[in-house]
Image (tube, rainbow, N blue to C red):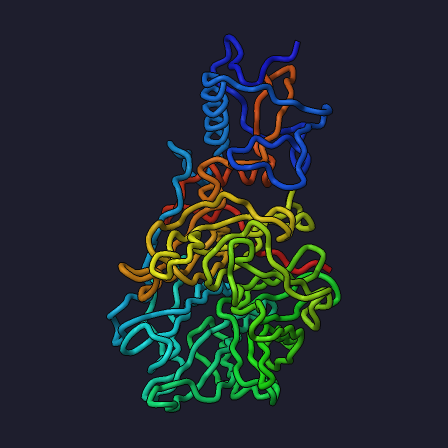
Length: 508
């Protein structure tokens, strides 16, 4: 008779480590969800259809205690001390690289962050001299961190010092082959119109660094990136991506938006096939300015080699908070009809950031994208940018979780995601006291911490063996995820790196 996995077997003092020998690595393992079931998953195991009985309160207590013990008992035997508790929730702030009314500036906005192949973090921002308004003296600044975002070096003003123009919308992207960091950004002067100061003609520029952001070389005006009939052009903000799959592997992609003289507005992609030395205009989508159109795009590569683009919309409503599109030719064109509303992804009008965490073509049991954005899509401007959250998609952006992990319940605005060399997730985001911006904060956390200490999904049933009773275990990266879940939210500085899921050579 098979024992009930929800009950502790008589005479046993503990359960074995949660490695799921019979179902490890299977995408169709039975999920044990504290959130709504993930799209496309069925409640079944290797042994056939599985129908979970309705548990009692006591059964749930036993089950959760079992899973918690299994996670903690599987910590590495050497190199990392065994923890006494599961991971905590993500910390709202690990450090504050840019603080309002500091370093000669009243306000910092528009964050962007990347991790170099050497593990250095580069945090970019707009430094606004007198206030947080979009019109004024705006400089482009960067800081470096070599300890995972705990501390930051001195601020470097990349552009804008001793000028009264506007330098902004920084978009960094890293070439993993050469280590070169390319930075695209926008610049405009100011003009007077009906007694008010307004933006003048806007252009795109570039900088690059070959030494992890210590020094920067100007690339000049990128005139070909702005067609002559465009009256407005911008990039990002947030990081760009490098493709790793298919015929365009190695290509760098940066997103932007534009207005035209014909009264149309929309989005575009730029790409580079030489590591960021030269750039070309690729996919373009626009619509009548009175119609919903995308702006402030974020991009990620899908496992089939296509590019997924997610954007804020010019006309948010209860069923249309975000827009999305795909490019199937390396960013040269947008597929199908271009941008369409994303069902179930509620967010205020704001730049959001995409990051890939898991990929089946890299040995993971399932795909996983995450998106950072505030989660208060209310009409009141004064309160809608609040509660920075992380949401996940397990079907390559088709649908998104309706539940999310909260990073900070305070006012929050734009954000950008990066993966640290340790495998932790880093987020650089705007926050403030009575405003959703002004200060830019950084924090980092493990995937296990993001999911609440133990994975909230992807548990599988392991049947009994001659040496062990049946139990539940995690299929998300198998033993590696269990070891990560057994590590508290932040590693101590003396602890060795655990594992690095992203730092792999491009396929092919």
